[in-house]
Length: 550
Image (cartoon, rainbow, N blue to C red; front, side, top):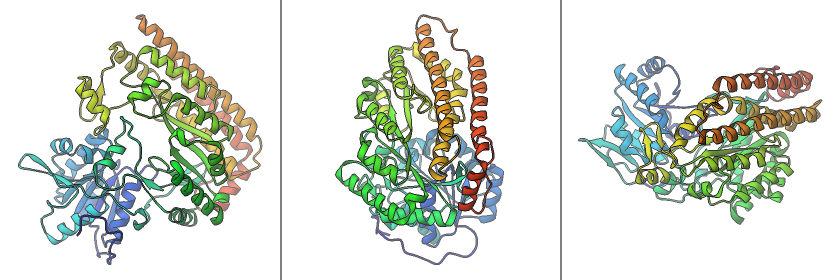
């Protein structure tokens, strides 16, 4: 098989019997990476088994012993999950599964030497986009032929790691089949929700992100965009087949840059209106703040846009510089202001701590957050920048002697070493607030839900009053968090650690969560009849909406 993408995949009749390829990975909101691999392999004539990585290892082993596949493929993005994947692989080997184990994803592609050294159960790494590489690997293994000269892989031989020349990226995304989705859609506000993809790649070079390194290391065009008609065709199919009303575009950066991006967006919106999707569905995107301008986003709102996620990351120029965001604080502020004016719900990523942080910059960042979400328009969230494998900033920290941690939990020292302890104590304190299903995430869900309710079920009783109450509650929660960080950081600098009170914060979060649940459930209870009528009219199967927060 030629090492370049041919534009079309030969279609073969499926092989009768057990699955030839088992694909193991996370399935949250649908793993489109695995979905595309499964669809391409199925078109090529392979029988596929898709497995949730969080399933019990014994159950996974029992399934695979019954199937006896030719290949088990693991999909791993972040190195933090490497121990979990290795436990499964070790269990499968111990259970007697001797087939070829391969692995792909951002981290394996960019740090294949580290992975193969620390994951001896793996036979090969599929580097970068894996559709054609995996097909060729399966063909070689089917034929009992040597696979070690396949383009786009890495493997260990005699204690050395060997990497073959990288395979070019998929040139024409429209040549790929629609991804397999062997799962029920998740629901927001009772409405079926599924992810879609309009493009691959990102034109920017943020220092903390492995995405641009992933796409720039392999030959080919970094950013590729699907034709709008193919995107709309897939959305219509999901709407008809699964009753999907909420689409989540999972593009690394929704393609809105420059004149070409605007023309593409105009055509996409025109086709959404022509197809009826604009009247019956809503959708979310992720994009850079610099793309947010009133005319374009007003038109996108009319076509169904309801939620915009932006990687704001920092509210101080020094933070934006070290993260190489190629943005300014004013651009981020302007984007948020525009979305508020257009009544578009927004969420954001924000790194309160980064390698350039000082106690003063932490407080400056809190001041920035107060400017954008002090009004309760969105919950306050923040995190710490992590030095992922394959990112420029990890290399920089290593050169500076500041890289710490281990393979799966990389870390770094702040310049002011007191911040190391402050971050750890603050993180432990606010865990029930901003981590996982904490209070801020519960508030985010409530905002997404009410927007979904109103967009898809107009005329609900008390919606404006509920929004006002939700904004007041969110603003109160945000300000409480802001004061905690401001006051505790000042005290910590002076040697006082008493303001970081995990038990007190946990109790506050639980009380406030109870208020949120009561507020939300009262609104839902007053509108159960129209909400359930609309949901059941659109989705003939599935549970009706009940007065409880998820």
